Length: 372
Image (cartoon, rainbow, N blue to C red; front, side, top):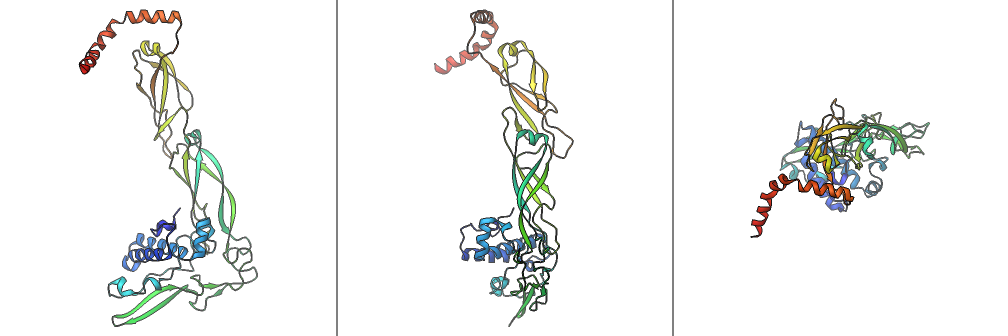
């Protein structure tokens, strides 16, 4: 979910002067008249304008700081904006280097507007992430007012077309200069860009056309998700305006660690303890996987720290017919206590291990040389 302070490139403690200064800089950078045909610049311009509209208004800013965008019931949504550009372009010669322009960028204020998206952070157990699950989550969602049906007007009354902008939501401001006539488009200050006037606001939603309710949504989590995976629910977000679709719900996944398995992408890693005798002689051992214990023939002479691979025993890929691998690494367990009989056998084994001692002699020689 967007952070309006980040959009304007200011801190949450920024003063109004700092907010205004940054807004002017960014609005100039992304203004469509300076970036004709650049859809990304147009999108950025809308984002910057909306952020300024909220943060430059102390009441809206307090609401945003406390509740986020969903608390801005009557504010513009889905990247819409109503900021006044008259201040931004007050010194039009400074913005355009002495040249002129005729505002060719307009917005359909009366058209449908998609609702805001919602971010939800969800923590899963390791097995839930690996095998997939269905979760029911509860969140606060801005929905169409059930009393006025989203019109914002008290039932039995109607909205009227704004007589100042004639329903366009916009006003053209002209300015003559020795270099020509300049025209810029600003938001209508009477209807605030809606093109309509509500004389009898809905008593339930106070004219906003929406209400915030707690809603339960079932989210299908596919098998194989991991930390940072985003699961989307189409139109699970806030209600749109003027018949626009709801925003989307984006569920950000984090996964608790498991005591046995360590995950790396779609592969799993396990540390498997084995006895000294199994390491020396080899053995048929059991290796844990996600679903069962599998048999594995451990070769004789296996060293501690040796890693083996079990293909296709890892984590299933998300939305792909493939499975990762499982790697197990041996850890030789040395008993701290032995019986007299075991000690005698080990002593006999050591006395008969002349080859092992001779193999390590060169190492001892190197150590001796190091200290000489």
